[in-house]
Image (cartoon, rainbow, N blue to C red; front, side, top):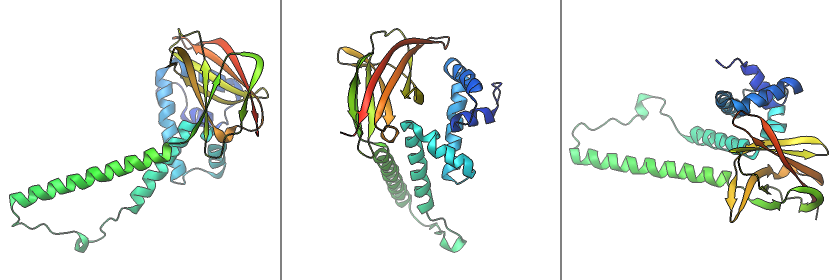
Length: 247
């Protein structure tokens, strides 16, 4: 790794065990240095592969489940890895030469061509089936909540049903940034942070912030929205507040 950042530091960051000061320094580099961000994504994939294969220690597995999987995107990647592992495990592999079909040397060119087309068709159907299963696994119902900036009044949000995510649509007037940083707080404790891009919703500009439904419990929440400059510096834009209730 040629980034002057130890792999174990990135690993600790992803598992939530990195101390506050080095964590803040690393987050600045992630936002400002694309190479560091790419390395972080690669390490995410590696951690997911190790989790699926049972290669994490007990402590790492606990951190993975309670901290790493806090974002919806990582949960999608995990479900894909698990689905792919089940698919590969279901495939039978010949264990002896007796199980391998012997090609007929007298078959005609026409039959070879027909067999190739059939094999290709079967392969296409299999791939499409896997893609469909992955899409169904990743497609999670979403509760959409529109939020305007300000701290005057807290909008009420009902605790989402099990299996649902909550998509906060943060209305924003300052559209000069390419990236935005959204950080969710509950009782002044940071719960989830995402770097996002702005989207058009009709005539309005929003920053979409998707939260895992299981993250939300009754209480008061605040979203701090900042713009991320090309140099990687955060510039505070506004706060958004809402209250989660049971009904």
